Structure formats: C-alpha cells, structure tokens
Image (cartoon, rainbow, N blue to C red; front, top):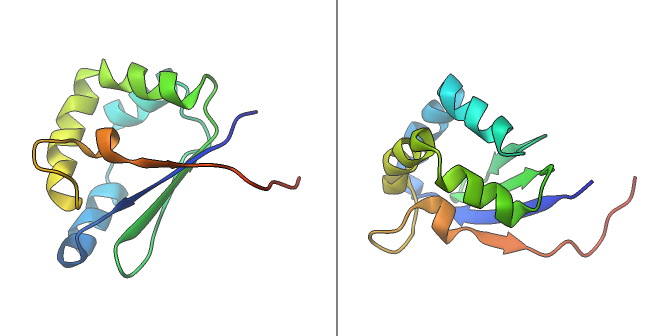
Length: 107
C-alpha cells in the first residue's frame, strides 16, 4: 500500500469558512476522488492554517492527481477552494500542494 502526504496553507482569516465547506463536500467530488484511487483520505488543519493531507492511493499519487485534473467536478471544486489557500495567483490548490517524503512508518 502506498501512502502520500502533502501540505498547504489556508488563509487564517478564512479557516472557519474552509472548515464548513469540508463538512459538506459534494457527493460528486467524493465519487471522483474514489474513482481516482484516493482511499483513506484525510485532511488535518492547525489553528495557524497549516493543512496536512494524507491518503493511501490505489495508484501512484501523481496518477491520482492527473486523474482528478480530468474530472469536471474537481475543476469546479478547485475554483471554489482557490480563494482559501496561500498559493500563487491563477493556480489551484491541487497544483500547489507540497508532497512530503515518508521517512518512517510502523504498522
């Protein structure tokens, strides 16, 4: 099983609004994530806006991202989410995430 982790930064003044969106993720978005191998996917958010994501992709993480980039619902979701992140103008969050290297694991 593969494990993938990434970080992003949510704008501190928009944290509460960002959390509300993630309490109501569109069912079509969840289905697209599942179709593209995003299993056991979780997001963790610190009070300073640091966002940590973890998933166990069925295919490579890069292929999972490529698959999602072809999903129309993901394009809509990323447009909605882009205002919440500290990312370069004109970029989507899924184009700006920083993938982390796994350096230790224990079962």
